[in-house]
Image 1: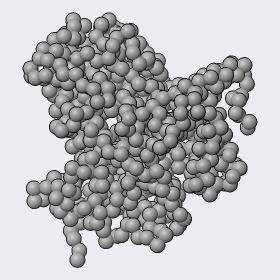
Image 2: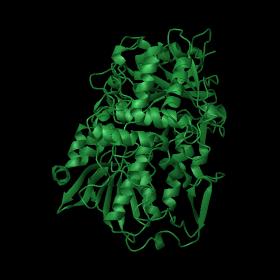
Image 3: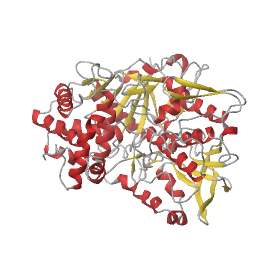
Image 4: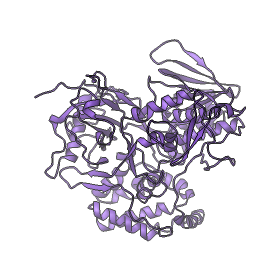
Length: 626
């Protein structure tokens, strides 16, 4: 028996290293009072301090009293900056292009799908996940109140327990557990030989790599793990991951699993050009190695892979907006930023207009935080502003690429695996997750759509320029309907094997893609919400949050941060850096935002010090045998 299809809506929806404590200031002392009610601020996992009426804006001191800040952009970086500023007594207005907040992180209603009192089906730009090594963003989430959660919206995170590396053409899949190691190394036991043994064990268990290739890769990781920061920035930032692991000389299995699977599928950047510093430091070390060992994590309950327990806006963005409004933050939604105006050594205003047309106007403030994605931010920087700070012009060299998802609404619950799926052999570098299994506070058919859909499989295409298996065309060359059909075919190729039929055509009720993607199948396909990618040399073109213009600051995942990855964590960290720079410009004695850096195991520091000397002498890393 057929069912009515959902509307065919192809909605396609965005180093200046800081010490953890600055200028001797302690952690956060206050939270702006809300209408006379007591506020609360989490000082650490499971620790809260109640603040009485009058504490907050009134006690922020003369540096912030009455001062106005214009935040350009209402994505994760803009909202993070707004929260930190409002807590410190600044009057903040956020100017956002869309009619809703959250940028690429927000969820969107699928038009015309909610009936019988249910909410519309939830759509999104692509699935969100919160690795355990994120620490700045979860700290912000702890301070966003959510009914029933002692730690705010952070309490809405749920852990995935397994990753599925799906192989095409009937090849055996790899189910990889993502729980922390039950017997992690004791302090002092984290030696190069121990690390090599663990890497070889994983590769032996889950791949068909020849022994000599597995050994070579393990050795390359040791090279990166023991490289000093000077070598990482001066040498490995200039070397592509593909070349660092010598993928071209190895087997197809090696190239697929350790090259493409760790770059294109995860961060939409090609292994052939991706910076070794970024791939090795963030994906291999922070996400996988230290994450599985429980080192440098966001509290004792944090696991490697975490997702929200409801659509993103319900679980996070909407509560965030309510909290910011309670702190006095104002929002100008549907507003397009045209130009940041500069004169006499300062930003003098911002030229804006309604997104859908209407007269332009100039908005003014004491300080300005540009929190737009880099591809949009740099269009607003005029010649005079760029001349005032040359690092703005260097942002023109930063690159973005497409990494956009499609949500499939299914008639049958289809969780696939309790975590994410990486379709290693898919030409479009497909990743996915069955979402409803994590939404423990929701009954999907009761709460969403017309009651027929019982699950949603959220899939992301990271490679839009390779030919698919169904039509022989790239994703950009396909029409919307062809993209969906091709993506579904690649998912089935990875998941329907070993005698199982995980995905069935008759279960598919409809789909959704972010409307930011337009013109597919035509001469000029466009994606307004692209992702920063990390080719070699990228680091040196990324700006600091502090500019040479005293009242102008930058926030966004393109800003130079310690995490050095296009991510929500990078966006949040950059906002903290921008706010700290603003406080410095005001010569404020208000406490600075705490900034967490990536974990650096103390056991490897002696080896890094040796490498620092070797690098200065022009010698290779101790483990770099070629």
